Amino acid sequence: MRKPLIAGNWKMHGSSAFVADYAAALTAPGADVELLLLPPAPYLRELQTALHGMSVELGVQNVHDQPEGAYTGELSAEMARDLGAGWALVGHSERRALCGETDAVVAAKVVAARRAGLAALLCVGETLAEREAGSAEAVVQRQIRALADHAGVEAFSGLTIAYEPVWAIGTGRTATPEQAQEMHALVRQCVGDLCGRPAAARLRVLYGGSVKPDNAAALLGQTDIDGALVGGAALKAADFAAIAAAAGGTTIGDHE
Ligand code: PGA
Image (cartoon, rainbow, N blue to C red; front, side, top):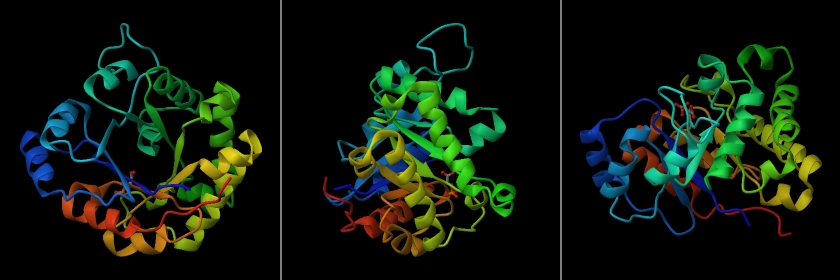
């Protein structure tokens, strides 16, 4: 069975005061949901301390592929782990678009996360132009297969994938639950083809792109949607907790 995972990506938002207020306002999730917060790395420790042992996992929004070296401004997966992170977000569309991260770079980062003992949360998803050209499926399949090509199928072990249509990120325009379900089924099928059916049945596939408290339940109710990667709405502790509450009781998935 797959336990729902609700992840909050703060992006480049926050401050020490924000961390304190957020942690004070966040209500503990039910035992049937896993929560993950991805603050800017400098606030990771502070957030961990402020959460006072509340069962919320923590991660970073990006890692470099090398463990150390002359890479000014970068953060290695080992350093993230040392800071208290258990997760690394990899291949977010903003990094693919703004920082030129290719499928090969993204694969190297998944490998780095695994090397450091971090769980990787890999983002895939098509742009609006790709969807309108009818190539959404092909793009997502390419992004997933690239991980196997560059890093081998072992890179999928322990992996979580977030399907985030780029046109739905920060736009208020969400994929319909049916559109999202269709793409999630495709992601699972693609991983099944590469790694076998049991691995695909275990894989958690999160939906991301304008998830809000009022649309979360419909999305999370879909068979192949195992959680959410939340941006804007994760900046309000009450909204993030409401999305987590919508995931409660939706544990789904095939028995192996
Ligand atoms: P959004 O961001 O919820 O603000 O659309 C999602 C994301 O970028 O992961």
